[in-house]
Length: 359
Image (cartoon, rainbow, N blue to C red; front, side, top):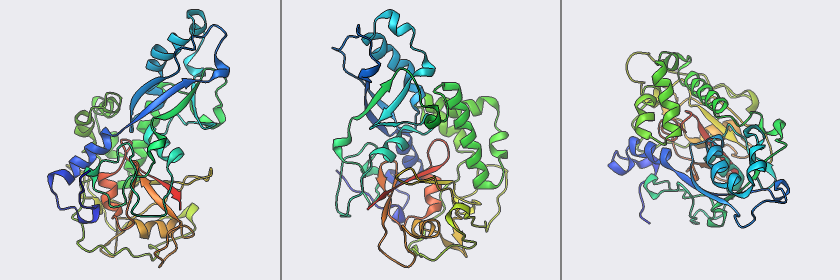
């Protein structure tokens, strides 16, 4: 395994260029092993077929797997009459007794449900999409024993209160585009960049995800996502609260810079704020704080942002964090600049999805 510079020292080399990192984020994948819940099998089921294996894209969604799962698992295990009565709307996935949300990307689901914190910063695990080319000093996050990710497929009685949405592809696409628009609003204070796209351009965003076609996706996404600003050679990971800090549920950080709408997006540090969602363990609500990339001309670090939003887990003016931030299966150093993260580590839906794992 080779090593690469950390995000705070990236110098524009080809292996750590913004486009290369975005491509690595987009192309990350996770091996899945999907088995039908025994209690959902009829007496005539063929038990010689135990699971369906697939290399799923991290930026993809579970509804995109349904047709292949039906063809290569359900229709082989069940007899023809039993398979015919299984409706797509009744199918759902579970991991370790927990229903998996349809509208979360597969990579986010995996990180949220399987990541384990390590007390030693020198630990290294093998994790999907934890490519050394990304060069994060924190290293991969998930242990190899979690792969392939073993999911249970249920054929009836979906828990709608947990799934929130049904598993239809059209519903998933609508949710994806809504996330794109919301991220655009958080970045620039309006959704004009998305709404000004032609229909075929908006379709290309979703088709790029469905077909795992980064070039098709990025041709359009480059009109929405900013380029990373030049990184400070010595970023100051200040733990002091950002301007306007309030309790986490209502934290809003006022923007310092405005942006135009002509041509390509301005650099990342000109964003109004960074679209970031923080996923906490034990069923806690998702935290969505608005974090500006610059405060008084100084780049905001992840340490600063997390100390503002979650001071109990990331105590201000303390080096002892009580949780580790995970993005795309990788532990992220706390001195990483959030503007850079918003430009290079956002998912296909435009959001930086950060999973916190308690130490």
